[in-house]
Every structure is written in structure tokens, then in C-alpha cells.
Image 1 (cartoon, helix red, strand yellow):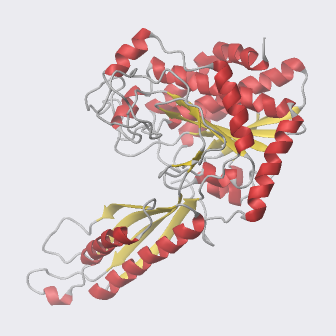
Image 2: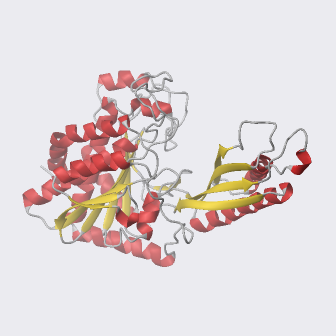
Image 3: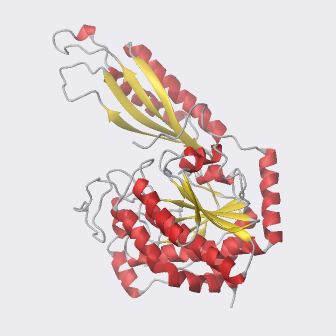
Length: 468
């Protein structure tokens, strides 16, 4: 029996405690920087498993590490647990129905409740295997907050949290099973705040200076900019404050939250500066003032073919997620008209509602460009990093959707999470026991980072916020 299958058997024994952890995080979804209960639940279980806990890693209150073993190499397993606003949904319900037990309105629309629990499960299995076999090496689980539009890992990287890590491993819930071999976008986000002058909109409008006008002009300007930027770039915004509910008052204040994405940090900064100039122009046109507060950012992913090939070997040894007929029946209720899965593979008529295979890659083929972003990118620039995705929801389920929330506690989601833990644990043990594999991964990493060193997307003075 191989090490991978020994670990898989151990993970199956451990799984119930970790699926319960993922369900508890789903039940209490917390937004970025506010994941106090989520982090504490992970810490409590890790401490019970005998890990050594270091809280507030990098000065980030809801970040922590859990370490076991000793000596080199140090292999990190990355976890997340933050939720998204406005996505509350009743578990298992294929109709839009907010969860009546959820008072926050938040929802695990990206599956991070599974991500954190699955990664901790993998780290625990590796810890036990090292102990039972008297093997050297260190496994370290990182509880990472604020992946959604804040980039907690970027702040952790800036604080040196990964400086002694030899390689890192991660995963993400999805609608297909594969080793990620993608190029994500770098991004930066900021608050844009316009301040004007209130007055009576009917009696003395000439005395007012509308902050809401400025914000609307900025949005119009950015929409024109979309025609003149690279096709892989993205700009998103949310209006946080429109200036109040009284139409007969010239709005003295308005605020938006902008996210700017581009293929790399250099191009992202250039695009962000164009957005900044549009904001300043809008303020000039309306005789208002504008303040732009950068909130964080992340780098594009730096791939590592050595680690990806090794992880793919582990995945092929394990095979696809073992769904059963009940899983397929339930998943059919959640099928959408979306023609592509999360990774751009076309969904054909008659395909299984749950991905029941393994997508492989050719190491010589170009990397796919994903127009999303992840702060795993920043970790990948300071240590060799590899990720997988496993099918946890029906094919075509949009990320960041109530449909994904609805499926997050179903047996299929649990099976996808447990399967990801097996892939990660097997990959970690390969690195812990095969010095030549780690050496090759580091050589590839050094070759790439020597040509293009890490360029942190954070601007000077930006720090992770304290707990609210």
C-alpha cells in the first residue's frame, strides 16, 4: 500500500470532525477581517490535535498558524474561512430562500468553510503520519483571513510569515477536479470617498456641491475606460454610501469600493492610476474633494510545474471524487444554464451533474488565464506553491452565488473536501520524504523569481485593520 493510500485511509477516519467544523463555519459566516469565531473553531480543533498554535500571525488578528513536527523541510498548508455579504441561503434548497437561522445575511459563497477545514484535515493527517513513522519535518497549517477583496495572505507575506516555508499547498472547492495550473490576475482595492457641500436642492442648489454627482461621473468615466484597457483586465465597484435618502438635499458625501485587476502587478498599478485620475477628474468637475484609501491587494499566481506535476500524479493515483447516485440526484436540482464550468471547460448535454473524472494538463501547454484573483498569489512569489480543486458542487454552479451556498453542507461537498485533503496530504508527504522533488521545485522557483522578483502590491502604510 502506498503512502498516499495510507494517508487516505487515515483521513477517512478523521473526516467526521472536520466536516462538522466546515458545517459550523457555514452556519456562522463571517466577513473579511471579522472571522473571530471561525478562526477560534479552527484553533480549538488544531490544539486538540496537538498542534502548537501561534495566534495573530503577522499582526493580523484573525490569522494564526498551527505547527507540528520539527526540523526541515517546513511544508505549509493554507486554509481560509471568510464569507461573502448578501448570500445567505437555506441549505439544500434549490430555490432562492435566505436561511431563516442566519441573522447576518452573509453566506459561504466561495466555499471557504470547506477550504479551511479540508486544509486542516490534510495537515492533521500529515502530522499523525510523521509521528507514527518517526519521520522528520514540519507541517504548518496557516489560518488565513480576508481572502475576499482584502488579501489577508498578502499582509501575512509582508510580515514575513512564510519566510521559513520550503513549499506551500492549498486547494479550492469547485465544480471540477484538477490540479490548478492557471495564471490569476493581480488586483488592488480601495475606498473612494467624495466630500461636497450640502444645501437645499430646490431653494439653493447653486450653493451645493454634490458628492453623489462626483461618484456617478467617476463611474461613467470608468465605464468609458473599459474600452481602452487589456481584455483580461477587470474593474468592479460597489456603492457603499450614496449620500443619504433625502433627494431634496444636495448630497455632501458619497463612497464607493473599487477593485482593479490586471495580469500582473505592474499593469495593475498602471490601470489603478488611470482609475485614480478619473476620480480626481470627477472631483474637479463637481468642485468636490476626493480621498482614495487603498485597502489591500494581491499578486498574480506564480506557477510551479514541478509541484503541479507531482500533485497530478497523486490525484491520478486517488482518482475522482467518489460520488454516489444520491449525490447525482441532488446535484441535478442545482444545474444552471451556464455553458462552462468554473475553469472554462464546456459542459455538454448529458454530462454528469457532478464532475466524475479528473482533468489533466500537459506541462508544455500554456497556462490558462483566470480573470479572478487570489492572495495565494503572494505566497507563490515567496515559496514554491501548488493548488488543486475538487468537485464539491454541481457543474456550472457560479462562484460567489447563493446556489453554491445552498450546496455547501451537502454530502457531495463533504466528499469533495475530504478528497482534496487526501490530495494535499499525499503531496505534502512527497515533499517531506523526497528531497530531490523539493530541490527541483526550489530550482524552478528561483529561476523564475530571479528573472522577475516579487513585487508586493501593497502600498506603504497599508496595514490589516484591527478587529471591529
